[in-house]
Length: 254
Image (tube, rainbow, N blue to C red):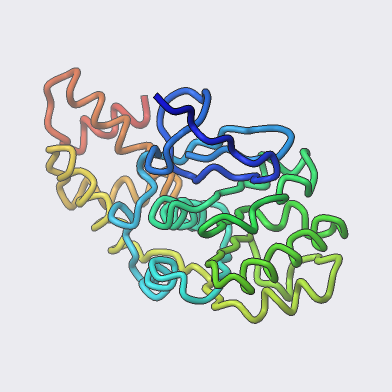
């Protein structure tokens, strides 16, 4: 059997699609990411991060832009707004390199070396490096290289470019030229509908009064609401109970 071809040392990203332990060479269709020319780092995409599992509500335009990635995209919104979910969904959809800078920024901008050869690039937590000039220079260079190749890219941050403490004005200009989407929070009714959909997918019936109680008495960001539903699913299965209001209150307040 012929030996597998070597991966060039400077190619920094093995596509963001893998499950299972990090070891050896991976096919591009295996779901995750390896990042770093000198320091390979496994970055696991959440299994739930897909466009199909995202409830768009008022953010349908952002979903469409990320699905096509025909032009550069910038997402912004606070923690819990869904920006990481969407960026990981885009990375999976496009088999792109995905870098969460909240986890990786300490390794320095050399992490970006080689990413210009990736099919697409998704960079999360841009605010983590905004004030660092070397990072800004490297990000601008990467954006220019990807644009020259016609490769797609998307950034996500906690604020729009004009509110980021960017050390490089040219990077602010480049980000401002992206298709920008400030992610809007779901309404209470949209949150309840999301919970109903996720409950149905688990084989659970979520009565309206229970959905209203969860929305009004738990943290309202989507990750917290879905974590509450996960707890209820486990408890209902263990106790062989339906999701009545007294049962839900006993589980979530117990």
